[in-house]
Length: 194
Image (cartoon, rainbow, N blue to C red; front, side, top):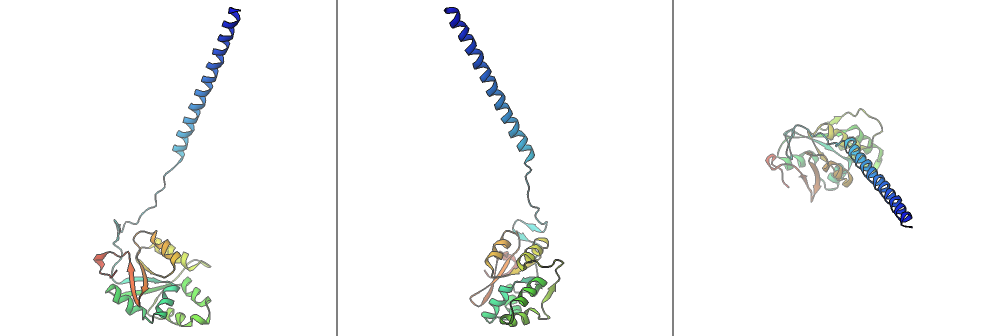
């Protein structure tokens, strides 16, 4: 009987050792998987323009190139502002308003209600920016252009577009507030009113 108990104990200890070995092997496999996942995970950092130094955009400067959005033109009309002079009063420098083909197409699609905005948008003092794409939403067009070339100020009242522009470092936003044109995110050294 003592022999049987010793044999049973020996058998149980072998099973325990095998279970322990299986657990160790599983732990080692999990560690190897974690190491492989860390190797596979490549950290992606967006490339920042070389003209940005800290938060200041060195490529901005007089004469300022300002991309206008449909909402900004409509707000300027509602507040009875002359767009170019209001921009110059805000920035204390020469301003070149720019309109992309997509924004002009968006104003044309809005119909006869916005014919005053269309007349303003077709003003020869406004620089036309040609778009090489077709059928793109105007906000996407503006974001794409500003991401590629950070030499623009974006004039808009669209909350969604403002949110997208704020994610692009070094691009100021212009808007109408209390019958005046205001700028956010423009460094103090350029002389703007906040």
